[in-house]
Length: 179
Image 1 (cartoon, rainbow, N blue to C red):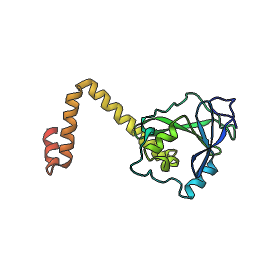
Image 2: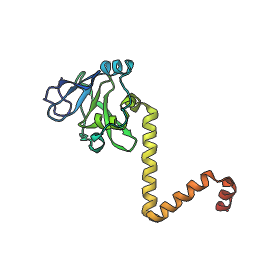
Image 3: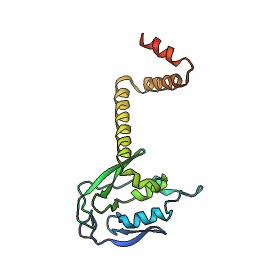
Image 4: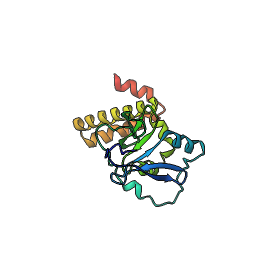
C-alpha cells in the first residue's frame, strides 16, 4: 500500500495501540487503519479511556493536515474529509468504499489526548458533522458580534445571557427587553 500523501512511499506495519494495527508512512508520519482492524478493535473493547494522571504531551502537538485530495491506499478511491470539531481544527479522511481511515501526523495522538479515540466512528456520521457546522456558525457569528461591539461588551452580554437563563422571572425580563 502506498501513502495517500507521499504517493510513492510504502506504508509499513505499525500499532496505534497494543490491539489496533495500522500502517504508517515513515516519511510524512501519517497512519492508515483499515475498516476491518478498526471494527475489530471496537468490538474487542479497544477504545478505553485514558488513565488519569498520565502525562500527555499529545495535547501540545499540532496536526499537520495535508491539503488536497488523497487516494485510498486499499481500493484507490478518493478519501472524503470529515471535520472533527470539539475545538479541533482538522479533518479526518475516510474511504466511502472500504471504510478505512487516514490520520495525518499527530491526529491520532491529539484525538487520544482528548479521549475521542473511542468516538472516531461517530465523526463520520451526519449528526456529528451537523453539530460541527453549527459550532462553526455560532463561533463565526460571535466573532462578527465582537468585531461590531467589542470584546468587553460581548463579555457583558454573555454574562447577562447566562444570568437570564436561570432567573426565575426570565419570561417577564425578556418581555420587558422586547418592549
